[in-house]
Image (cartoon, rainbow, N blue to C red; front, side, top):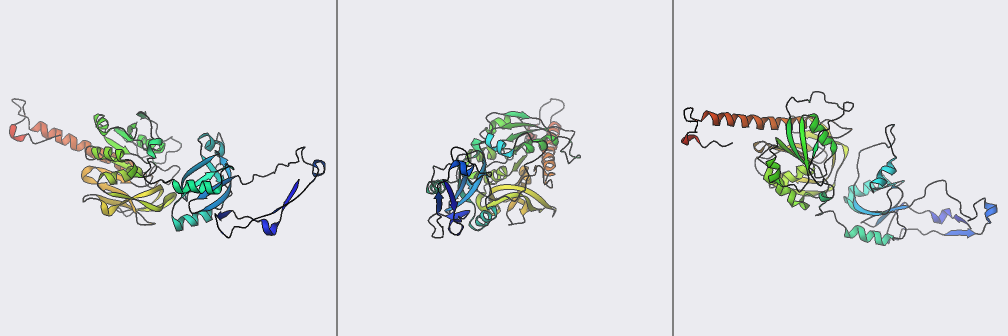
Length: 404
């Protein structure tokens, strides 16, 4: 059987909208041809020398995008966003292809799709729920129904990516990758890092700045953390809606004010809620490696890597909390500090690898917070010792208001 498509009536758009009157139908003209005449195999089928579209991305607005797949196969649902970062998939150090890497982690990928058109749609309408599928048995209508019934708001995505038990982290940034040779500290600081989906490079940067790190699960009790007597606590990045993890907010509340704390991305949002502030879902979020941020304290502009859909409302924060960084694209809050509580946070990723590295110095600021806390502890201890009666070894009754 030999088939041909009529060009005038068969051109099918790469994207179309379900139930749209603009969708054009196509016809196929067929005629019988013997295998011998066509040069094909005994089955009469000829394998195409190129990959054909075998995947569909169905967005909740009803649009259907044809594409070619790589990585895992099947059907998956999620929030579709656009990212301004660029990357390559070929390197002399690689041990597997990008498709193999994704398949081993059950992650689907597509290509040969109009990403510019999708991006324009997301910029206009905001982030959309989408269903990606390679399963021909599922109709477009079925996939559309899935996209309109699934929602990311209020879903705890952290529980699926956090570690199961505490572990120690000691690896620093490798010497061949180290770009800040002045960050070594003679002192060692004990840091507890809450894993809400933590990036390993955050841990490497902390270790490079002189920290010994214990990573704990997202549900780790604050009381257990304080028993470990850390010099500081890190609240890491992580996926999803901060309002969907009230248990994490409660843990943050119990720790604030007792030890210096540093929040990154999700950790920043949890700190905002724990302080009494509110978070909100952005129209299409910040995703990319080239977002300009202004450090209000010194006026310096930093190029940053960002990947989040939620932000802290600075107007909802209590007195004493200051906004330290502002995203120059939309003016949203990109960093907080509460000096009295020895608290600091960033909405973006200072650990970005391979970069940008503009904000790496913030790890040094966290070290200074911990040093400051240590100095204050020493001063209080010496103050208390000075109140002890040298003849009896007992603190004078009228001087017992000093607490450490």
